[in-house]
Image (tube, rainbow, N blue to C red; front, side, top):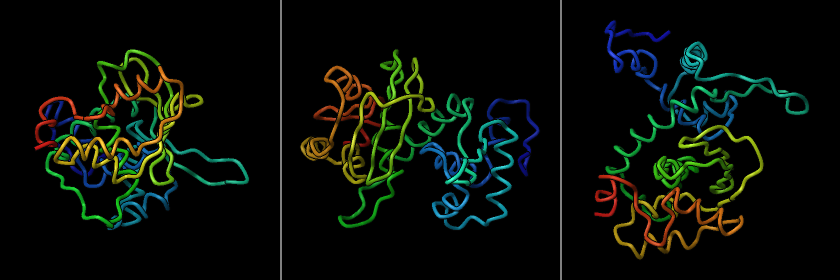
Length: 228
């Protein structure tokens, strides 16, 4: 398992035994965006050594948080993805950590490339409101050409299981601006550039669930920081 064990019978220490090693949470962050090849993970995690990535993936598989699948021809490749257990346990952890970090982020200068995953995390995952998610639906979010698919199942996020009820298309910068722009007008303009497909009821529920209203705001204390 992990290289360092805290040897404490404490839930935080036990959790850190699995998740506290360098790169582990960032690997899980990448897999939250869907199945990824080993080469995809290497490309999105510059600085990680190949042998260390392989070790972290083995540790996560041993913890039943990641599994690898062999895709049939013509793809004929190995991909890594989150397990059902990981979908239950990891999004709330990443969301809590992301809300802590979002309050300290700044908007990148115009023209700066922003990763699609960053836009998805800031614009969708961090705004997820479990208290509004007492239903089941499948969503697809396309950010700068990259597709993110997931389910909402009775208060939590889960692996996608069907055709999307709502499809959202946006650029990463607009998704981040919808959260971090310093004034309501700028946030509203960013949201107005999103494209939503689905029936009216499903779209309204999606907007409420992820705070994509004309004046979007994150729930809780982070709202004040993001809009300050």
